Image 1 (cartoon, helix red, strand yellow):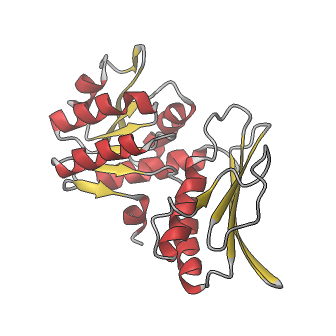
Image 2 (tube, one colour; image 1 turned 180 degrees about the vertical axis):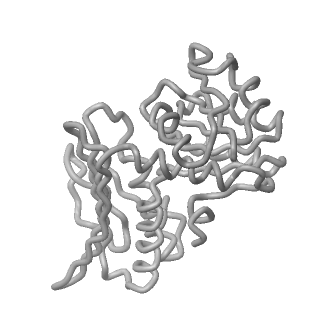
Length: 252
């Protein structure tokens, strides 16, 4: 039975993980947030890391460096679900993994979303550039980053199917404000919608002449993300150093 330490324990995901972890065969070592301990006796990430089997981080990008340092200092594996990460954050994760830390990072810990990404990669690998790729996502009115980390994850999967890293294919500003222009063949377009209390809807549209494939996922509440995160934590406990993803948890 793995003991989980929660970083960002006051956030929506932190609270969801704390609620569901005991029902999945895990124990809670404690939880910390910006102001210190939320539950348990550990006042910061470093002391919490020393008392748990695996850390799970759903805090903020600015806290990532400190949390990686705490995990590295104790050798405890860490699952990172924080969204809004930039290239410099991924570089920090790569460095920590190369230096001997077991770290799993995913923009979305839903098992369904990660299976969807696998299907998207398989589909684009078999369809030619005459199939246009568009990604549409919708989230609640309070979500700040756009497109969502999950949309980018799906875009990376689509690009990987076509043998690209995705960066050169992504188009975020194709329409409006003087940017109107025809669609470029082979690119991946994104559209972001915000409103209401939507937990997360994602649709990958593959469109060719006279036919269209739509691969999608709808999140009804955050429990699915928390459940996936706990499953990742149980899988990561005691794992050898390296960088992992939800694909590894699913055996894909």
